Image (cartoon, rainbow, N blue to C red; front, side):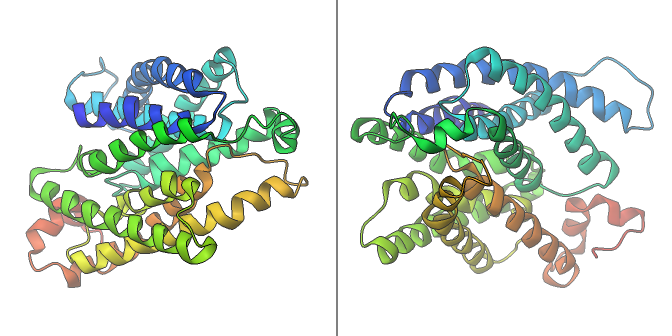
Length: 328
């Protein structure tokens, strides 16, 4: 659990200091609002899980699992914050997160309790939800003013980006622990191995794309797209049984994310009919890799009965197969 805490409070916090005029605000907002989202997320997740359960309502149990679920909720909110960075004050962000947690927990309960989806690293539940919620919210927060950038506040500085790189390194190091936080003992090692291979592959893929595309290691890509492997492997991290597959998935995530920062982010900023301004590029780092992660997880799940040598282990990862459901 402490590893997940480090990712939320240090990783996300320092990654968002890249704006040269918003560094202290980014760290402070991340610190306070993550603490609030952590507690509010536990309450909402517990409530919605009881709604979709056959058991009667009862007091919400507090244990390590519920604390990790609270951290995951805070992570989704900080992804949303990345899209609104520098454009919202504390009160606006507090209200936004208050309502986001309600819908986040509802979405998570539907996926887990109703559809029994296997999304160990939260590619769909955490990253995709947080990214698209934030990008949608960006339409209502000074979008035209931010797109115009008359005051040049939405750019990074040498020192601010240098410090933000510390956040990237923390996220890179602790992402295997994040994805494996709720993994059962039989698959925890597999999640860590797959995530480590995927995120290292995304680092290489994103850096190679940046070098070939612009002739240099673009700082925006190095700060963000190099982490996409941790996002895209999330849904399949406990399903993939071959390190080669994890490397391919992670490398694809890094390249796609880097392409998003190089082309999609400027396109959204330059075409005002969208009126979307994603400050931190969460659509390219979390949104698109999250969607691809969900698709790769679905493909790996469909092939699980043929790729797993031990049917018992597969049944532990997919408990609904014991009740007659197929892998398809």
